[in-house]
Length: 162
Image (cartoon, rainbow, N blue to C red; front, top):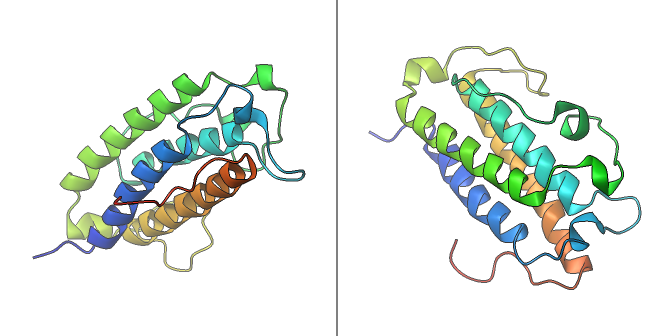
């Protein structure tokens, strides 16, 4: 029988690949460029890493959420020297993804139906509902990354199989 987590798990897999594609082929300067009033790729990538570590915690695994003060909810754009190197952000994304994949394989249907403490705007706050919401949250910000890449004159994210 297919787990109720299967659709969200598929989306998280697609998001992983799109995130890596969105963060590829960038010059050091491009990480910090963006249309006026929008977030640069460095902030979007860091925010997604911070959020994915939070997703690992929501799934019931232990991890530290890196860079709360610079990438957490409501953080402001800072000067370039305030951010960790892009390679460190990508390394943390891959680490969180590995932890998440491992934990999602272990979750039972009973665990997915447990209420979890969260600040997401859902009426039903089961682990399954929150994981699904956070998968959507990733997709939202990956879409922003795609927009900024287009602004920078770089290729789109979906050009072939995911």
